[in-house]
Length: 574
Image (cartoon, rainbow, N blue to C red):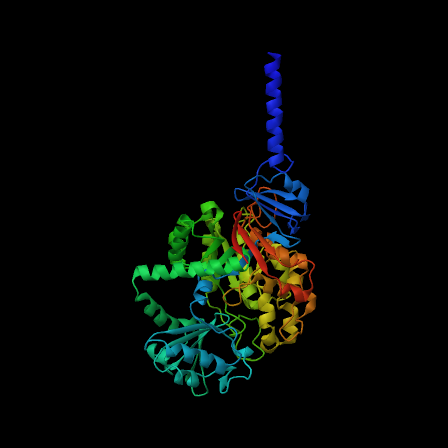
């Protein structure tokens, strides 16, 4: 009997030794799916800020710490990536951009790099060569303030349509301004829409005209719809399945672009209920490869009718959330649509546009708070920001029992000194886009003068010092969705010519990184599941070639995305 027990003991010891040796001479606690090791890890966790390794299993983070500590999670089937000192951080959270528009921007003319009006005309003329007569030519990204030389002739700096119309006689053309708050139409498109000297400006919009009243081709803010509705009619002539498939292609293109840029979560700044239905279908089919937080942007009547049926929190394994409403109070600074407290310095008869009546925004805000939805209102001008803060403050006072609302002002670009502390006091988040500062700075002084610019233009540091929360993004496709370029703008405020726009308002490296990770997660009420690399959190991670916290300013722009990991899976690899 003793002999049998002795033999059993020997066999058990041998089995343990074999197992121990198969795991490299160490005990495996819980075999991981993926281990990132020998890295510089910025966890964004204040209690454990630095690490060397991240261990992932079942889509979540199992361990964050030392290389030695990670060793015990490596089993026979574990995928181990030795990063050789590369930089690891939580996946970027894009806190304000337009998802379908990003996808669509890959299907139309990209005019962001055109240096002058002649180049725009050349791009359009080339597109017309292969287009069918009557086919719409659509593009986006031109900006009159960035043209060199300035267009001649021009009205308020805008080009006049004549040369473009000559180059596109057989096709309607609609080119969106870089800001998205104006369009340029050729003669064919204006004739199609019946635009004449007698056409009235719509509420909240302007048809830009020459000295004798002729439309020059530019339609600002709500006047865009005079042309855009005919383009929409053209698109709607397709059957329902063709329309749906086009949206699905746009979703696919946007997903691919985000993964290439290290974005793992995306706050989509406004879709209709019908398009949210499509997103839900894609989520049900596991077709969303990044996490979407979609804001509802629809009419008051539809919001009132459908709001209760559309709240989705952490749907489809946290790949789709719908819990906020997007609206607009004004336009953009570049098109002089931002609603200002004082007239524009370069157009003293004009102070911007209120594109949605305050009464309507107040009613929608009441619906939001009654139904547990977050409000996210676009406001760029100082008057626009003040009016939104007033709306929010009024609604909050009527509902003192509602707490932790995290309502946002989207953009918050130009703020009166009197209103800066109100963000923190009211608990309103400034959902800003750092890259807008360095992109727009070339014309800010011209629009509003130096005094107002210094007081309240992109005042990140003033907001942070007052206790406000800032989340970051790009407003893509207005700007490139690339978070690296946006991060560079946040910490340098450096323009293309090397000048720096009010450097005292720079963010620190850590502040900028928080604005793109933890703060983005906070805005969407998801700070307990993402935005940090912490045990139990979602394994949404990006690996970069440079350490964004320590590399030189110049090296930031040379930083490459090496891996994008979503839900513990490598979704992009350079």
